[in-house]
Amino acid sequence: MRKDHQVLIIIQDNGDGIDEDARKKIFQPFFTTKPTGGGNTGLGLYICYDIIVNHHHDQITVESEKGNYTRFTVILSK
Image (cartoon, rainbow, N blue to C red; front, side, top):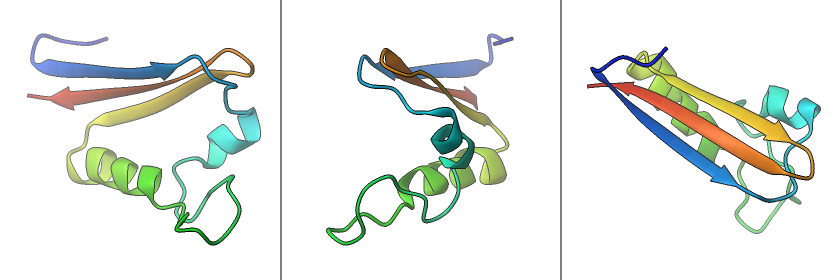
């Protein structure tokens, strides 16, 4: 439950969604669903998770429904 001393950020799209196997790995370093090369390192969400969760002790989660949406929720303490 969110409290008054927190900031809630929700980022959602209406794209194809992310399957369950990918969601389980999405915050792992070097995980990508894109072809290798072309600058896709698979580090973006890992770095976000590391900063938000490990350094600030806050929260980031991902929800997705295949064919409908993906939603990232970030809860930061003020």
